[in-house]
Length: 392
Image (cartoon, rainbow, N blue to C red):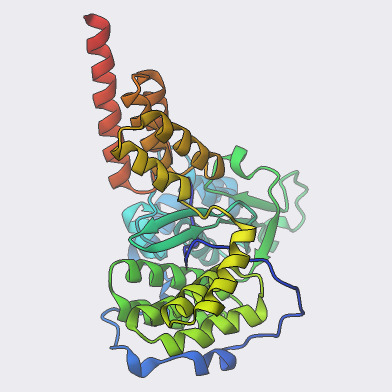
């Protein structure tokens, strides 16, 4: 199950010098905001709704969860009631980021949504909560001409003081709940992050999702909440700059990217977006200087080999396409599109076994129910074809 924090960017990287970053506060962020340039949001955007328990969640605690809490204690009982097989039957779905109540109601969510839902229950039960950012390689996806990256977070639950008092136990002080397979996160470095950072990540995700849906006004109000809630979350400032560009506020976008680069001179997202902004303004020399430096760090941006592979498929060069898709997968092993098209290339080359293998991986790595069902149908068709061939 791959997730999580979606960041808007253009696919380039840059390395730069390291200097002590200035501390960024909400007061520093306010001059970069442009409230009057955006219509009021059509939905409620409030940080206090992120972890709010719905009536259904409260009933679940009182009825379904209560036996587990009595038998196992609050921490272990909570985990058992939420994630044991046959309980809630949660499914991973990265189509949109849900708050706690939405994730519970839909029995689905991306990793951030499931962390938020778990935390909401834990806080209601007075179980100590620790949020963690997991150091995994960022994964790319795209929507139209927007490129997005995702990271990963998980949650660690502590023991209540009342449960620990006078009890000798071998249970770990912190118990980590993760929504990736153990082989994907085992041994990975983690960093404890604040709840305000989690809220900012949620708001930034919602901003990205609104922007990809063409809802620029709502996108602005979501990201506004993110930068004010946690100004140290620079991904939200990058999103803010992209939103300004989408609205045609180029002059307003430039100081936003510049602010990020003042704090993180090597921030690849801000550097790439700044290069694109400068090029659009006809400031070619400045833009080319950034692009040249970016190319030194990442000669081949995300989706480079994939796009070449698609072009090869259109031209009937299936062996070339196979090699290009394989090369892209070496950089992004869990991208479902890459596996699907590698499967198609293998099918065109007559290798139905490898075609089935990679389309099955596309099913496994799909990030939404829609993708899952599409790939599953293709896989079922392919298996039927193989069965007919065996019977001939």
